[in-house]
Image 1 (cartoon, rainbow, N blue to C red):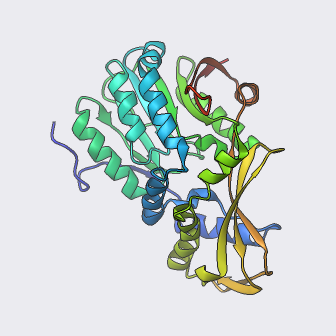
Image 2 (cartoon, rainbow, N blue to C red; image 1 turned 135 degrees about the vertical axis):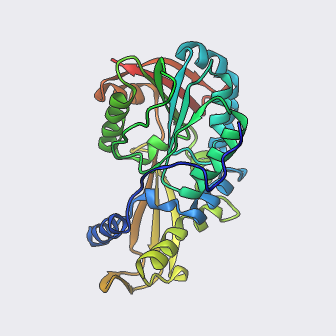
Length: 324
């Protein structure tokens, strides 16, 4: 089978529009405290920076999860069974996907759902070249919204939703339950979901992962403002804002902010928003889980944990869920 080119990759386009972006930004800047949705981090430059983050020495998550998937892939494949239609939320570069598809028995199709066009096309090209018999059915869209699945040419025995990277942790509890409930609908009564979760551990270790010494995470965070300047005609002065990520033990999560370094006004589409010196704008959560907490979260969405795997240090876990 010939590998797909950027011109021949067929995408189901459900990505947020410019009006969606503008509406979310205006709503977030008018809120108190101010906030911006983390899903808009991933323009082309943001996706490139995130891949660079995953290679920083402090950022253990990707490194540990890749090793864990490699170690337990055969067990996952045995639990899932043959002829799965793999649906991945937030597919990124596809490094983890390669390990999963390689382990599964006769996977029928692969549907990555990704908000970044460049990341989606790049990963589909690479995977199509390596897994020719697996039908590639990419969807360019926001996985936090309901996604109608493309129908594969070969009939699948079950749908497997793949959600690695502990990306679920970027949502609030209420948002997580809504997304898990949508997953349950997507997978159907016979389906399953394989979810990566970052586990609670030393706060210093966790906090360092989001404040790397090279400043890549800071550049990634501030790139959101650069995107708003470019796409919405905003006038954020990137030198007047700073990245800050702190671990909040009582909430069990990293909270990431963009802090205003001085009193200033920012305009977006003619609307002015004032920032006080030191004012924090919330841009991301990164929840860290316990087994009990994650199982309770899944149960609220009508799902149950049927298998679980951790790395040897219990830093990161994979959980296989099925409808309760």
